[in-house]
Amino acid sequence: MLVRRTVPAHSWAVFFIVVWLYLLTAVTSVAAPYAAMVMDARTGEVLYSRNADARLHPASLTKMMTLYIAFEAVENGEISLDTKVRISRNAASEPPSKLGLKPGQRIALRYLIRAAAVKSANDAATAIGEAISGSEEAFARRMNRTAKALGMTRTTFKNANGLTTPGHLSTARDMTILGRHILYDYPEYYNLFSRRSTNAGVRVVRNTNRKLLAAYRGADGIKTGYTRAAGFNLVASAKRGNKRIIATVFGGKSSAWRNAKVAELLDLGFRRAPAKAPLRKPGRPAYDGDGAKTVVTASTAVRQSPRPQMRPARPLLMADAVADAVAGVLAEAVGEESAEARDAAAPDPADAGSEGREVVQPKVRPRDIVQASLKAAEQSAPEREVVTRFSTSGGQFWGVNVGRYTTRYEAEKVLLRTALAEMATLDGSLRKVVQTSRGFDANFMGLTQEQADLACRRLQARGVPCSTIGPS
Image (cartoon, rainbow, N blue to C red):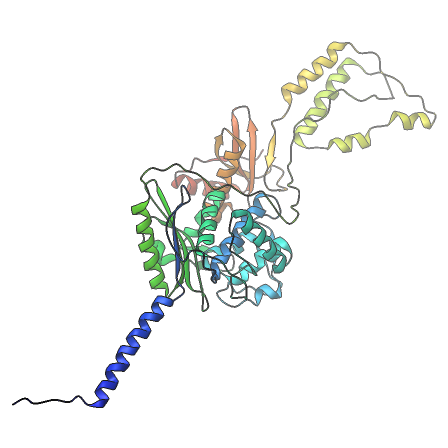
């Protein structure tokens, strides 16, 4: 006998509700604003993309552009790493994440850069923009000019920190391009993004990207971002062997999901990238600052003829000519007086004649006196010295030499890289490149003997060649 069973109405209702919730979840996950790009950093070749040109909220990925412009401004003399930036009420009032700066407080630019790069501090980013361009609005205009020059065609910046603002949008493609430019345009600063923690002046801060840096082999940057509107964003770079990959994610559901997705994309990039590829660095845009200040360069090179000036009091003797020439060269070498001061102090024959006083002309000197003076000047002409930061140490303190290099550019690059790596002992020192007949010496000056000895020991422990320089 066949028995027909009936299903209660409420059971069917529960079944349909469960199916409806499942379908809704599936549709929602598909429609979530997620974008990604993977690029071979060596060549710029795109290895994978998804919604890469969708304009989305970049959140704190914005700070990559703020830092790019800060590096540019330092390099071109607009501002220095030691410039004391006054914190405005606007910067201090930015919401977290922040360093906790107070209105009117003064803090060195280097600490603001560290806080923006490592902690993603909004108050630090705003302060950087205001220090460079005068206001956040003017800095945003410069950000947009720089973005256009870099080839970021679908990006519009409204502020320096990435907090959600109408119209403040970018794409996964544009942020990948920006990450590649930071890597190759300013490699001396790139190590900032791999620090697990750093001294930001007022306190030590920890990296917002430290979990991926610790978990993924070869990862060494670059920048995280999160707001409610943006979701969890990340531009990451990793190097394994000869391969360097950059992966970008917009719209992650959580930091854990974002990190897992970026790791998956980096793996994909390493699989698809060829083992060998030519390094084609991106073209660096032309400098377009806000009216850069003139970089002060001190030089002791001889700029005047060593021929002694006419003296009205008595005839000029051969010994006087030689003595004056040597004295003039020595005075320029040690910086006792400037050429302008000597010219102003010397009597002017035209003034003497107007007062009715007779100008006594020196005797005609043999030509070999002039030649001997010139030869003495050439032999004793001091070596040209380029000062990369101004100081009043006057050579009375100790210093540290970190090597001799074939070009001035190499020496300056080593100085900057060393200063960033060993800030604890070299902070506040004077970076000098001294040209000699054998090359370009890279020196840190303005240290005490104890500071110089400690810095040298720490650098030698890292494998950096180092020797102390005594006061002259």
